[in-house]
Length: 307
Length: 271
Image 1 (cartoon, rainbow over the protein chains, first blue to last red):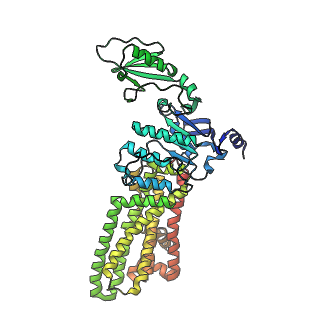
Image 2: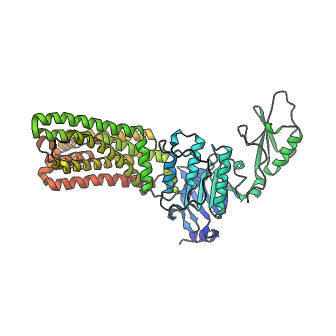
Image 3: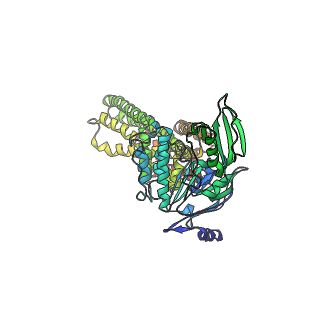
């Protein structure tokens, strides 16, 4: 075993016989463009890590490289075993916006992933009503329904490392909650889960750690609560012609106008207080959006969420 | 592996193109057999070989084109849509991805061939002695091997070309070259370069469809014009049984080598 491997094996934390993920010196470039620039990362078993960052930060490439589908330099281990030498069935990976063959049915997809070598009994049952009818061809499903099928297939068995790239995109509120519940059960059983998303807000409610990428490097990695306090939060307040200019509540660090919206930026830790001040100033909740005007969900991001 | 084969096969067989190929080949084979049967009644046994040759040539066109394009599209769809990446993430190696795809596409091509040969068998039933059945089945086996080699070539194209449309067009182009042009080019070059014998060998062994064609004719014990210049050359040069063995090995190599190269190409590229 190389010195690097020994280090990783030492670092990897074990829990109930399961072992965590260690990554050292992960690099990937396309020609001169460096996409991942020496990623070192440890995620313990029984932990959900949210990989966040802007578009092009390297989130998808990181997950793809860990899944073995993207060639890279550097090494990764799960419990001291190099990722490339893991037995089948120990990892599960969902890429961003997966598109399965249109003629495959829901039952075909599930049968495929249930029948792969290394398949184990399901650790988590798929909730009733989560999946479209089994005979439905994937090509006839909506984007959200197709994503449910892929997610259900990925969460079959008992994978020890789960890598999901924007799993909550396209999902409605019900599916959103169901996926979070399934991931939580995998985590509780000791699986290491990495979930990528451009916006941390989607993941704050259930992630244990936030790993922020920028330009292919990890710029911040901390427990959710600690990370939350350092993050910038954006609130959008709908602005109607003729409305009085609202007072900028205390705690807001920057403001700007975008169309019919007033954009308020603040440290994440101030978000709840700012929401309270907006409410006290008479701004109705239905005029407030978190994350952007297109964001349907409202309310506070429950600071300190996570385990 | 079997789960991946079942998935790819089920997906392929539900596609309109596969169903159209199956129905089209069955219909065309039946028409050729009916026309051949008329000649058989008029000309007696002299009509058997030309009829069989027509069915062989038909079987070397449609199912092999289907296999080449389906192979290329299955791989590019698997790569573009992320299915291969998900399977790789579950621990499936590139060789498993390629072999399962090859098996599924070859079986899809074989089903098309079975439909066509069944149509021929229905037409010929009662007119051809039952003793010819082993040769009939051997012909089917050679055609399945040809479809397998076309599938392997298509899969290699799919591993090298990323976009679906481009992969389908390249696979179709390679198939067209193999089906109609390559042997003429090689023999022509042989004449120019005064390399007669090597050129004839290369034209036969270096083209899976030509190898399958000559092998089929040797299997049905055809003679003279039906056997063609390449078949006649191999028959005279090697003798019938050794020629059959060499061609069978060539076809097996044409199935294995592109599949091996495809797995290697996938290993060296991002999925």
